[in-house]
Length: 376
Image 1 (spheres, one colour):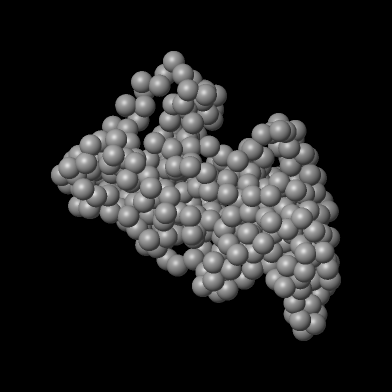
Image 2: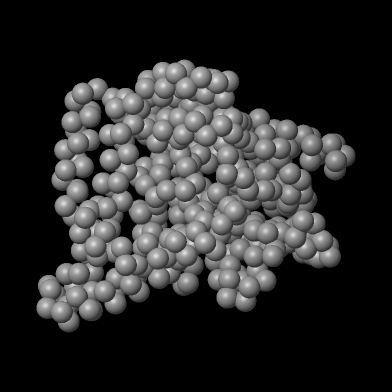
């Protein structure tokens, strides 16, 4: 019950986080257990949220064990199907508990469940696939020791690409790949060789799904973010290789002029497209300004608090999304009641007006950024 409620609220809150949520194909929506979703991990808990909200079937997900240490957060994670993974960098003394985690994953899969496992085993705000850790292969290898899972278990590689990790109205590309059937891997291999073979296969399946740009230079990152933000769904899903090519060009470019030339090819639209964006912006700017007035008292303090609590960490998006998911519906009810008491419209009318005006503010902000990029 709580899982279903939180999923509905999370889908609602994601409307304020993403200008575009590009889901390529329908394999995630149609996925049925027993299955493991093996994804990269660029944005901490936000990754589990966006994948879980995309899947139709209820999912479980692995998460570092120390996140359960807070009683309230631990309670929520347990109700939301979190599975603790113990790592030497957080709780070295509890590493043996991973045997219990692996067995729990097997039982979930035996009951036709779906588990999200982040194959890199770490979160970094960048655009680069890291080496595959041993966690996925251990869980998969143990699961297919059960004859009922050997020929049924599916591993679905999924690539996540965010346009940025700091601002609302971002673009995310969710790219499922070609399924892996681990039961088909030679069972005569030793355990170590089998796991190496599986990890190599998974890396090869994930690599085309995650456009890479390794440069840490500020101007290169900004140009890369602009390009991702500008891609539209049909082009991205059918030509993901183009993003790989652009990423390589930007990574090697040390010239601002070269970066500008690359960016203009993808962010600068025709004059007709520019005027179309301008019209949308003008239509949304007035309700957007109303949205800032009606929601600013809530959003700016809560986003600032989330930034302060997660400063120098990778948890800003996840914390802000969680806070909005849980508290924004309460704010809507409270603000609607106060505005109704003040004599401005009926209580029931304020309930849709508040979030709609807030969405208009976010959308107008992203359109303004797009027009700025189109004039580069």
